[in-house]
Length: 256
Image 1 (spheres, one colour):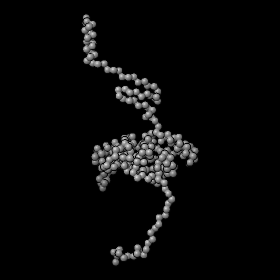
Image 2: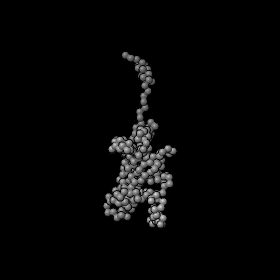
Image 3: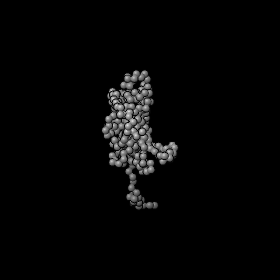
Image 4: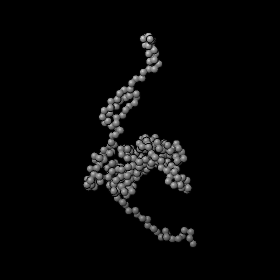
């Protein structure tokens, strides 16, 4: 029969070789809306309500913009009120189509701006005059909906346009006739997530699709959201230059 002292010594040596790991702290899971922030092993657990918070632009649309649109256009049903359905952001990669690192850099920058990873747009047919083969990547695009869409539109209006060089307002004639608006941005560096580079800047196109039936309704919707449209003054008649007799003479034209 083994001596108790030997068992005690062997047990102590066993724990000395293999230290007992501390048990992880318990997290109290209450209701999903009131999850407390707990710091465990240098990892901060963010509240779930923060990730599900509605954008301030969407809140302004639901609380203030919808009543104004109903009053101005006399909508009988709330479902007739126009809204932003989706935003499509696309970017041409140019010389990066031959460079894999350049393509990944363009995708990373657009993902930082929009908050969603873009997809590659490829050629549907081969064009020899442009040296394009079928299936070759030509650009990248991302489609935004929901809270991500409202967050990007809010940052575009309040950060992107004010930081644009020599910005004089958006052209109000860029609607396509079906209530959709398109705008081009020359440099992505207007967003604070992108570092300014002295090299060749990369631009992008932003297409805003709305459920409005006319361009006037879509323009009113975007203007209430804060889109800085350019004010168009009265149309002035262009004075034509008066032609003189020497404009009609054949002298000096090389004809005999």
